[in-house]
Amino acid sequence: MNGGVLIVSQFTLYGDVRRGLRPSWIEAASPEVAGPLYDFFVRQTGTLISEVATGSFRAMMQVELVNDGPVTILLDSKKLF
Image: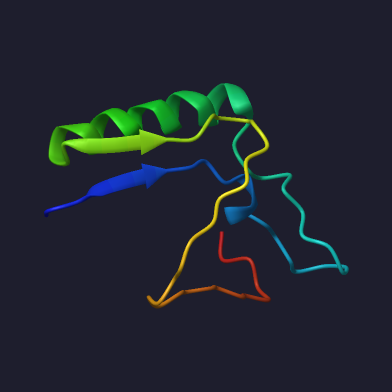
């Protein structure tokens, strides 16, 4: 790959929307678990791609992008496990 990667943590990626009008983040990883996972992902990405930039974990950030790619959103009304 001839490019770089920007890795920004995003807690809203795990939102349970099965009940009510607002997503629930109760089952999302705690910051104590998610922080080391985020750091591990950044390190592993750096072994594959030479230019890796990151956001700040647990910080409010404004990111601007142009997204032409596909997006997958899983909306499931039944809990599988």
